[in-house]
Length: 450
Length: 167
View: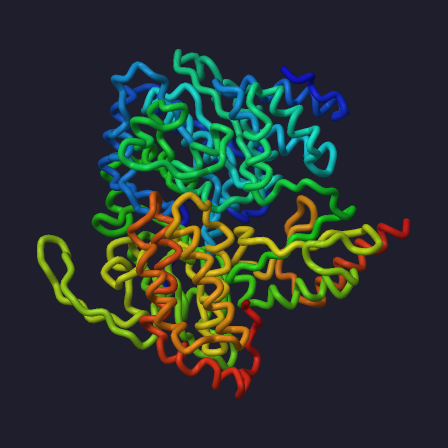
């Protein structure tokens, strides 16, 4: 069985490990902040660039590059905003960091702040984590009292404050510019890029870095071992470890931290997670949060990919796909937020899609017409399919609506809500055609989904 | 200038925290969500007077606060039951029986999702992903997360809520 490598989750669920500062200090806490403060800030931007760290929130953008893009000449303050809005369905990794190991995040925030001359950081935590917010508040107070956070960190002359800001149940706040609007006290309507790239015109129209919780936590470990050594973990262009969150119809759902690309989807589901539930077989898997395109067991992915300097042919089944950003993209989906949702043969893909469409219709912010109207239409169409009122043209109509949303909206929510419909109808078209009949026959043991 | 709404009557502790929170931001308007949370925790819901009060406090028009209350799912303009039961509706929970869990709670309290139960004890809500998909189906009762809530566990949790109410 492939071995986990726990860096970020090293202490998660460890008996006796608590969120208190004393516990963190006993485990070497804040030593990396101390180390970071002894070098020039820009050295750490270089180290993070060398590490190859890519964002764990969804897009997989290189973290060091993101930092380099920050406008340092504007004369305006630079803000750091921590995206702790964890809201992509199927994703549940930041929850454990925030609740069990908050100082790991705070130390990384302070190092990131020092590297980027940030004087003010905000942690935007989803409203549904009220205990998480209190734990963070307490941790910040402890860190401030011990001079790890505040106006003159460890006497270095560098100062930075951290405040916790609670969201209020809106998925769109996970989109970085929507999050910024929300933090400004407004409806979280995402901003159009250009010109509103956060690195230039972010929070209060100032240069802003927005990083996901898991991404930031890696920074502390990059300081510990150095960018080059970190880049040797994982696989080329997919460095480090990442936390894979497995949920749905599988024996052992849960969170598993692996070197990126060192475990295949098949190993993850069959060996690590113990395979399908008794008497079932796997049917489909969404590999990177609910907006990632679905993968169908039995389909094959062929093409050429770069291995080292060479182009090598690949011919994969779903089970063979390495769990890294590039391989999942080659298979037509994405690593996204690391949320792996598994469906077995008891699930009707029409009902699964109806469930997903209900989510996106609820969460569309309503700013762009194609998404506001389209997400509702898709929900209505799959809804009437499930409730026995489907029309002959519905399958084609559903696809046509989805095709007209993607690429026509201000933010990536357009793609996020269209991709499930596009991929489900393309790969499970037969199920959409035969749904009425299969429903009449009844499907034993199927859960209600919509 | 309208007179500041005086009928909000917040607890002194809430007032204290509000004064502490506002200076955390270079722009007062940023404190809108924190203030809405604090007022809702204090009063159970956001009344029209509270919207006006927060708007005055932050120097914005009442509509700028009202539009937040209508947008963000966690804010409500009416009181709810003594306990707030939020059942996750999204895919991973649904695959593991979340719809049945919700129906069980509804049965236990003879109410429907979105409504206050006849005895005023609970409000049951179907909500979107609570980010605990690995322990599906999950339920939040007030601030606390409950994991792997099948129908049997839903009955047990309901029983505890009913027992509290009889005390």
